[in-house]
Amino acid sequence: MDLSGIFPALTTPFAGDGSVSLADLKHNIQQYDRTGLVGYVVMGSTGESVLLSRSEAEEVLVAVKEAASSGKKLIAGTGAESTAETIERTKRAAELGYDAALVKTPYYYKPAYKPEVYIAHYRRVADASPIPVLLYSVPQFTGVALEPPEVAVLAQHPNIIGIKESSGNVQRVAEIIASVHSDFQVLVGSAATIYPSLTIGACGAILALASALPDKCVELYELIRHGQHEKARELQAVILRASKVVVSECGIAGVKYVMDQRGYRGGLPRLPLLPLHDEQKKRLNTLLETLEPAAMRA
Image (tube, rainbow, N blue to C red; front, side, top):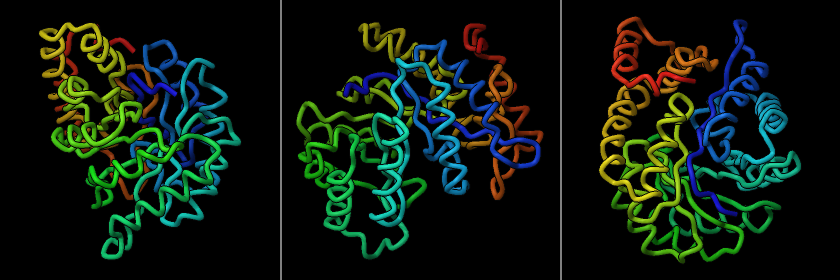
């Protein structure tokens, strides 16, 4: 399975009463289908997956599968704290027609989670999974990271096809790429590092920012792919600034606010995440005004 390209880490829209709005989610998918995004990542960090019930998560997975065009690759976030629960979620994603599973690191019992624990966990999940598995290292949320030696060992498993590396550490990305075989696919989760990561061998990215500015993220990928490095570096600078303000400073609420301004349905985050205050909205509006008109089209 070729995962080259840009995937958005999909948001989960909520209705006024706080319930999941499947209609708004399907609206967003229909809009994204018109872009160059290669597929969708569902129930990841940006999707507020840890704030959803199990039944809500399944509804979201079903809705995206129903709404997405047949040419889009679908990746389901299925990681849980226990190996057994992760396997169960992964098998269910396969039943629903997803192409691959994105499995985050367990993190609650950090003192016990030595490299051999993660290796055993991922091997068992991959052995049981009917679909290919992507490792997911997101230390800014979990407080733990998959290091290159662990990734190198896991890359030998025939059903583990890649990793989403979200630390934003380009050196770690380079070390992972250097330690794995050529078929193992490295995707990054930091929009600020798309250009350097792709130039050293990453195949693509799974980005929160791509939910808000999909066209710009796809354009950067295509510029790099076609060797237009001067233009790519200029666009990376724009995306770096947008990522800092939208994602790093304003978080999921910021991504959703920008979506609202661009014809998508973002809405409010779910408590305990708080909505933006007026000063944050002003900063985001100023940012959007500085982007060229092409970036303002949904």
